[in-house]
Length: 128
Image (cartoon, rainbow, N blue to C red):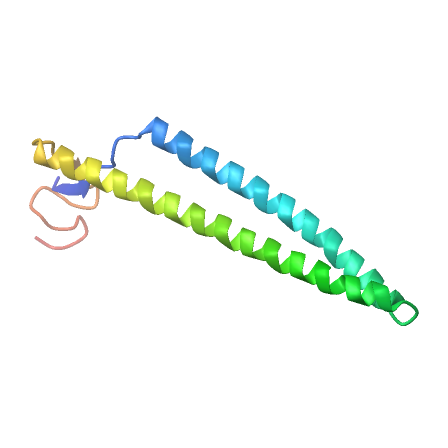
C-alpha cells in the first residue's frame, strides 16, 4: 500500500478554546439583550406612530427612540467586530504555535496508508 502524507492536526489548546467560547457566549448574550431591547423599542415606536395622529408628543418621542435603536445597532456591530478580532487573534496564536513546533523539529505531517492505492503506486483498479 502507498503511503500518503497528510497535515497533522494541531494540538488542542484547551485554554484558548475556553477563552474563545467564553467570548462568544458573552458577546452573543449581549447581542440578544440588545435585540430584545430593540424589539421593545420598535413596538413602542409603532404604537406611537399609530397614536401619533391624535398626539404630536408621541411622534416627537419616536425621534429619541429611533436614536436609541440606532445606537443599539452600533453596539451590535461593535460586538460582532470584537468577536472577529478574537477569532483572528486566536488563529494567529495557533499559527505561531505551529510555526514554533516546526522550528523545534516537530514533524508537520504524519504518514497514513491510503486504502485506494496498492503497493506499486497505482490505484487498485488500474492496470499494472
